[in-house]
Length: 346
Length: 175
Image (cartoon, rainbow over all chains, first blue to last red; front, side, top):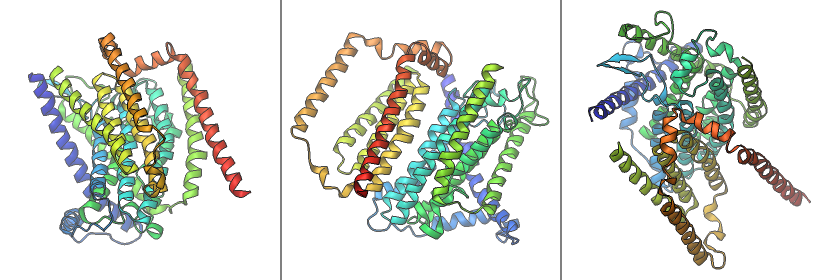
């Protein structure tokens, strides 16, 4: 029975840490994004609230919470209210299988630095990501607004189309590593004769990056919320913290995709000073270096997200569909076949 | 473990049944679709309880994540709410559906009574062999290879059918 209590306590603590991490990450990535966008456009961005603008996310959050909540007439209230929560729920769930560091020996037991170390890890992630579209489509539909509906339908079509290429790209990684578990994939990248999968799977890396941008509805694939044509797309009728929940979900998905890229292609938590094989003699602080490496790699990729947003214009809807189905999907299939050939020969 | 598992089972099963009732009783097709998603997600929980993690993930990924998204997509796009045929039924639809459901239920009850371990039997074997993706893959490509390959032509036929149907209809409107 004590084993059960141990598992439950461990899971609860990990869940709280992950949720706090994602919430804080959301707040500070929005600040970071606005400051970087500002610099890239030769202006300052928000720097006035607190030192270096560090209190800006708190001010924003407070503002969102205090705003009057307005529900337009004709909305399907139940769905309208639960759609943002659903989005956030799915975004929070997705991060569960990401290993942020090597296992740590604490209180007489090896503990994974991932909420769940399941053997179907990547499949779980794909399944959860594929649910992300519901929050958007349902929110759009229940708003009883044509612009919202158009945004939601675009999103549905986009996410389904790019999920295929994304899934096939991940499959190639799985073939190479021989496991679906993200922890196993990190280890596989450091086996003798192997290296980071970004070098072994450059096409897969490209597919995951592009697919990740599309799945998170970020520029240049943000025509879901194209403000010039659709006002705000699916969240046109949302305000205050309800809108805030949609934003949280978007930024958390960004973090999950960045973490996924770091884990699958950039060697996960392994870096200088961490060592590759961990064992009982390894001091806990070395494992914390691993966490720092992981956060660094993840942060670099989030920076890349923001950089792309400042650089690339939004693509047209027909271009989006053509790119997804006629370029990415065949590329993903060819990549998978080549990888299978390589694995079976070696 | 067994106590926790039974609690999870009864909760998931109850929600699944509620979802099923919702599918047939909801007036709006959108709510029917949502109820179906609820049922499908709870079935995934039941698969997890049986140790079939791969099937559970596939259930969410394919049914809840892809198929139902398309369903909702079509419902939202067509605005089916406004269509007049919704209230209409086929002749004798209600008694027929009750009869068919009764036959299905009788079949399931008979099957379970005949062979109580048939549903949970594979559980321990899958768990013992370590990874369940491996077991599944091996089964798929050995024992069930022929039916697995048969699904390929089936899907192609369905795709050709869809293309042919949409083609001919477009030809009609042009002519």
